[in-house]
Every structure is written in C-alpha cells, then in structure tokens.
Figure 1 (cartoon, rainbow, N blue to C red):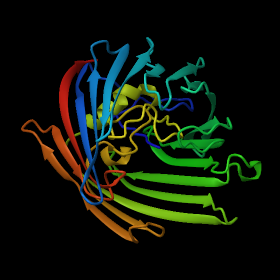
Figure 2: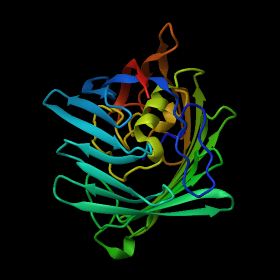
Figure 3: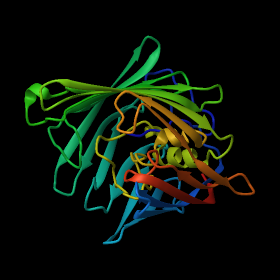
Figure 4: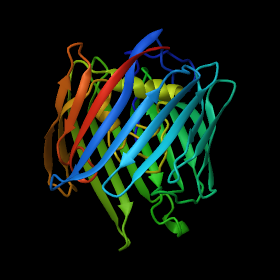
Length: 343
C-alpha cells in the first residue's frame, strides 16, 4: 500500500475533514519515462519495466504507456487518468488483462470522495465507501472495502483508516483485513498499522510498521519494523509526478498488489509497492535502516541507495540494493528522463 503526500512543499488548508488538495504551480518538471531493471538474489536478470508519461492533454487527462518484459513474454498496457474542472481525479482506466480495468470516483458537495467503484477483467465490481471525521484534532478518513471478493492478492473484506496532520500528510494508516476470507469468523483478523514521522522540511524520516495476522494454527503472528530514512537534498520531481497524477486522491490506495500492475516496478496509480512511496517521500532516499523482530533477513538491515544526479540537479538513476529494491531479492535499477509540463 503506497501513498506519497507532499506536493511542491505545500498544501492548501481545509476547514473540513477532507484531506487538502495539492497546490499546483503553472508549470513543473515531471517524469517523462521510467525504466526499471530488476535482479534476483543471485544477481540474475528477472524483469524489465518501462513507463512513458503523456501530458499532452493535461490537466484534463494523463496517459501512461507501460511495457513489462522478461525472458518469456512482453506485456503492453496503457493507463489513463481523467480529471474534472475542479482538478479532482474522477476516473482511471487500464487495458491490463490482469488487474483493475476501471475505477470511477464520486464526490459530495464538500469535495469529499464518497465512493470508488472498481471493475475487474473477470467482471467483479467492488464499491468502496468513505467516512470523514475529525478526531483529537486530526483529519481522519475511513475506507470501507467490504466486498467479499479476493482478486489479485487482495485481503477482503477490510477497513482502512487514514489519519492526516495539519499539513495533510499521512501520519497513521490502520488496516483491518482478512486473509481467510472464506471463513467469516476470521474477517478483519489481520491488522496492519503504519505510523510516519517527518522532519522540518517535510521529508518522511521514520516509519514504524506493526503487522499481526491470523495463522493456520489458530494463533496470531506479530511483526514490528522500525525504519529510518536518510534523504537527499534534491530530486523531488519523482514525488511531484506521483502527486500530480493522483491529485486530490494522493492518499487513496487499493488492497491489490497494484492497480495496473507493472512487475518492473513502474509507478502506477496506487502502485508504488516496489518503488516504495517512502523511498521518494519528498526527497529520494539515500540510506534505509530497518530494525525488525520478524524479518527473514535478520534483526537489522542497512541499505545504501546509489543515486546519480544530472548537471541541473535532476535525479537520473537510483540503484536500490538487494533486500530494498527488487521483489525478487536482488537489486533494482531505475532510470528517469523528464519533461517540462505546463499545468
């Protein structure tokens, strides 16, 4: 589950419980292409992904052409993001045959998202509804994803609560999901809690992740991870691109492995899983330290990301080390190109 919540170093303030929409300048440098090469734990090539972003119809529409390839096949698909005159994301479509093909978003008179309807290639339709509150001074959004439909690795039914600070940054995400969805007594028995801390310039510098899930033996298995992120001082264009695409729904995510999934790690809507949002949460990460009580790799992991910047300060390449990059256990290499976009 991935979310990136800072845009151009500022957000509009809001008097209601709805998270604020980003402040958008007249023009910006955004990502034009992302190429991702992924390796396994034996340093063997596994997968390549490439995404090409088309802003020619912005701000009303953005299109992304994605190609995933490995040693056996090539998969091409396209995604489109549609916005209304109020700068709200109202629709997402994808030509993928594997994941969600369509999401429609509905709003109330307060510009709050009230329903997200997702359509899958097999005909399944899932409707998520939303509740808005202010609790102890924090804006809170609760998503009810209660259809008993398991698609693409999802764990439904589930309920997710997003908590925002005064700067509209997510500071806590609580999820009650369901691994054994065919047995009602186990519904909402699998819990995940993520809390995030920020520094004075808005970078996410620490995250604590607590996960507890029901095991086949009838007990519960808890895991805790505490992660420290050290940041670069430039390179916000990647985060800005994701936020410009998601607009007011920068916080929204699905329980699938991804929407419009790119196995090569291309950043698609609701999908920064293998380009984790925290890695580029305002500034790109250059070091990740992870303390865990349940990690297969041991109680402490330290990853140094090799970042290469161009003469103008743009991030051109990120090399994630094994354990922190590719889902296949090896390193991941991301190359970026950029374009100036009139917004």
